Length: 233
Image 1 (cartoon, rainbow, N blue to C red):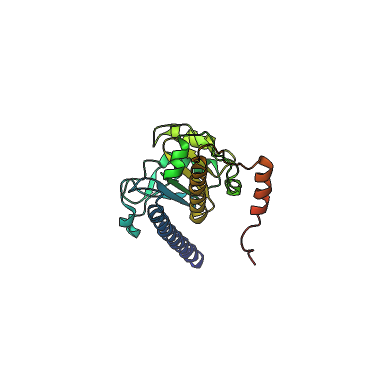
Image 2: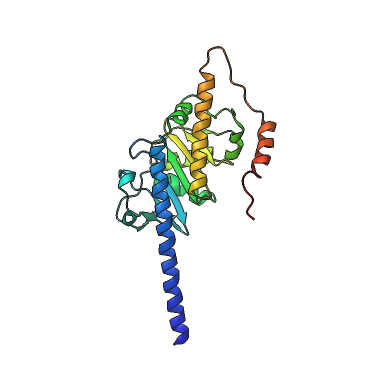
């Protein structure tokens, strides 16, 4: 009896820990989604955010303003897309998020309709290497071919553009970045939008061509960026 009680107690503790982890992750997801609006990366309910907790993917619901989301509105699906948490319908871009989680080590994904990045997606097939932060995304950022939103075709095009990268543009659509957590995924989104704005600004001057970094310069920057930040002592 003692052993059985211990097993039941352990199971209850594990379930409570999982609920707590999901609750914290949902709060962070909502805060990140709201930040995309505050920082001008999306308008209204465009764009979407997700985070993985174990085998559950928490994701913003479709058509609900982020400032209205509450803890009890949490939406979660498994890696096959079956809804396991909440009553609200998940984002229409769920295929894109799930494709990333199945194909990479992503723990969080941010998708936006950022103005400058989307503008660049109309002009080039790869974001020019205007700054060393290009290296933080794995190299020059590719533009995925256009496909209708919410489709497996778009998810497949995105994965192609993300090969050996942690961010890409979607032609006539927006951006996708991923990371080890929501903070990193969001930072990569913000950096990508900034680089696109920088290139558009420099390229707008008549008669002048922006200077770009060479592959060797990007590799050098990538090596130095690996040691960037505070050491975990």
